[in-house]
Length: 91
Image (tube, rainbow, N blue to C red; front, side):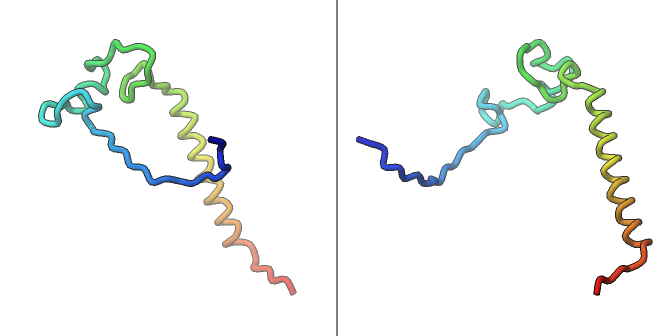
């Protein structure tokens, strides 16, 4: 059968259990049991693990915070200039 060329969205639903599908809810570990330095998954290679120091780049955090500070300074500076400058009305 040839493709009709019609495309439609379908409604989907997915569920992601907090247990990462490894244990029943009543036997699940806390997040900090695995997602911390020296946690149960410390030696797992090849994946990003939130909370693990070797997956964390302090320099990148500093760059991010510096960018946020510059944006905040820019917004505040722009606002101050608009408040302080004379109100110009175009005729």
